[in-house]
Amino acid sequence: MRILVSRPTQSDPSFIVGLGLIVIVAAAEIFGATFYYIGRMRAARGSAQVLVGTALRPPAASATSASATTKGLPTSAASPPALSITDRLLQEGIALRDRGVMTNALARLHEASERDPQNAMVLEETAKTYESMQLFDRSNEMWRKLQEMGPAAGAAYELADRRLKLGMSTPATGEAGMASASLDAGSIHRDVGGIAEGPILSISEVKTTEEPNPDAETSLTLQIGIRKEPNAAFDHTKVKIQVFFYDTVEDKDVKLTDADVNYEWLTSKHDWTDTNPEILSVSYLRPKTKGGSSEAALSAAAASVRPPGKGRAAKMSSSAEGARRYLGYRILVYYDDKLQAVQAEPARLVQLFPPSESGSAP
Image (cartoon, rainbow, N blue to C red):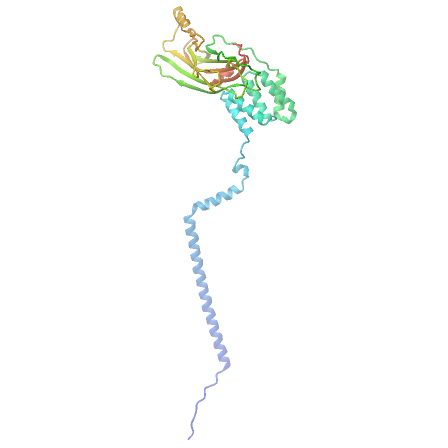
């Protein structure tokens, strides 16, 4: 009996190779499709995050845009350079002069000149300040300094040359009917070796206070601080202070007041030994009944003048020139008959009534 044993059929090699290629191609297509869809999902997710971030942070985008815009500008436009001390003092001096505070203006300009003696702008503004005070001898001194600097001073040199060729001199000044307080500061004497360069006295402040008075048309008081420069050789008996009040007549003409003016020192000694500044109080009073004067009224006014020990009242007769209203004041401070300080409110009073350089003049 024959036993038949089956043998496995021998596979065709080409079939196996073809099958393998099919499997590889199918795997590659599956892998490619998977990679494609995963990439699209990631891109969509990233776009959504960008949109959300932009919606939530608009100021950041604005700041970035602003910084990009600023980056193109020069540094000086973004932050201006700080002024030097000399330039700051110069600007302060000009501003004070424009307000009519001449003493403090000169103090700032002198300090600027000490820091930079060859600064042409400082010398020019100092000369202009002296001119506005009608102190032409001092202004010409400043112009001469600029002239000596030559063309290096720039436009200031040409201006100085023109000013000096004009030959400006101090005009004669006079004021009739002065309603002012002219004070001697005290009676204690000290040895004085001479006046130092620049002013010894200055006006530190002026405080104006209107006082309620049912019987007065205008009632006000000035509190004037007079400051002495420290370590300056000084004799307080050579101090003279003049305070002028001015009225408008019929709202057009400016004249010295005919109101009642009184003054007194608020500090006890007023010799600048224990107190600096010393405070002077000057009052202005125009009664409501102020009108045409008579001989009796003039006699009463003469009897009311106080002796020079503490204070004094100045009163002038009213004329039929028209209604008067208070306008302002002008303060002059002299030491040893040399002008030290000027202050006026409004400032135009300095131009209308230029001060005399000498305290002996009216």
